[in-house]
Image (tube, rainbow, N blue to C red; front, side):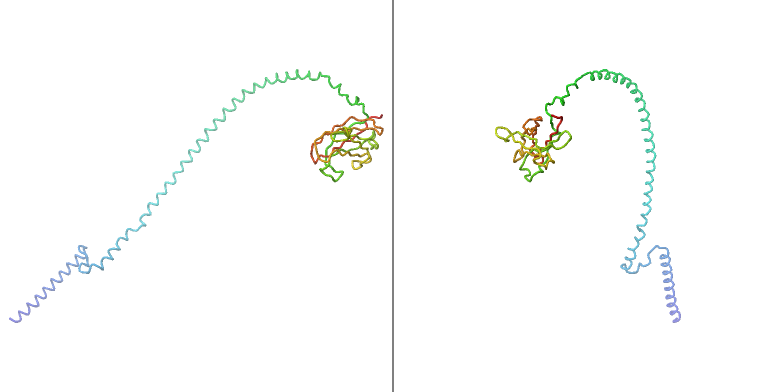
Length: 266
């Protein structure tokens, strides 16, 4: 009887391990099929970090396909077609311009009538016969006259500068030689008693030309007074017309040059 009791114990243990083996096999099948996660008996804390790394499949490189949207940049190619069409239309506007230019060419025919009319009016302008009274040169009663024109320049014959105003010049004969001994009389404001003027002799100042140079001092400052200059023989006979000299009241023109020349013998 005792032997049979021990066998029962061993049988119970055997049945237990057989059942345990079956349970293990069942769990293994469940784990393999994915019905239940494997670490169901493990602590929850070590499993959480592994689950947090699962979102890595959502990587940004998957956004690369939208970069293919740049393909629409090829659309500007239609811009070539509009540029060709406008260039053709302006060329048509050039052709009408030569038409109007032909018609005005007929009007210049009237220009022939214009040229004929002035030619008729221009001929009477030749008829006046007025040059005859110009022979004033032969009518002069004086054997001497002014050579050239009165010339104004700066004082060069003395050191007075602008504090001086005067008249100077020369006397020339028929052959252009200098004549001495003639008198030059200058009349004007402040010259001589009662307006008699002052008299200087040709040859008295050769700085104005040798041998017949002369000079007449008229004022100690520049002014715009008018003076008259005439040539006399040594005996006092007037042999030239009176030459008018009006100063411009300018320091750079405070000297008037008056030259006399013989026109005919006397």
